[in-house]
Image (tube, rainbow, N blue to C red; front, side):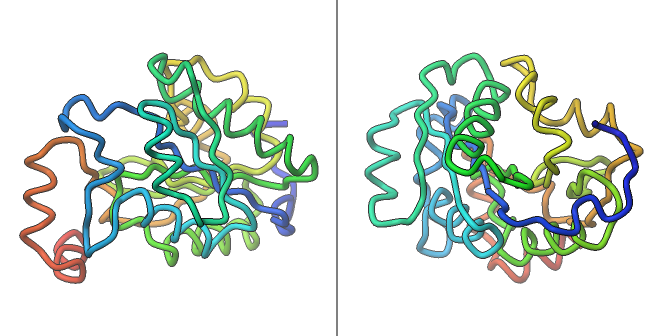
Length: 217
């Protein structure tokens, strides 16, 4: 039950499934930002590699230009799920991701929801979310940046029903707000840096990863 404080209810996070949200059209960017490169690796592949460091399985929810996205991940041990209704919003992709996770592993203990446009959401960051979940008594662990909390975030099984019930146009932010008392926070200052526009990308390319990360801490 969401919001119920039960000691160590996420102490066993196995199996843990990562859900990467990669279905959008990147309208503001002007081309699929999933496929732009940083450090010689596309944002989509960076997200996959980070997720594989932290989770037992990885589901990538694709939508716009799905065949190209799926082909780009050929050879990666991930499950691509196509969201034909991606235009409805992120909630539709989260729902599809949860359904796929449960369908593959009914015993899934938690899901780690992460975007593909946060270049500094590394495997280390995602592993820290999992480590906190195993130690804390709360049902959600979320990243804290820019004076708020957001994804990447890990949700225990108690929250699957709520995630499945998200309105299509809404993301997970509403749950983080509604159940704030059941959220553990991981300080992640660099999380405020995501790629929405070409100006964001140009700024990113002006820095090396360590320097930019340091400047945001």
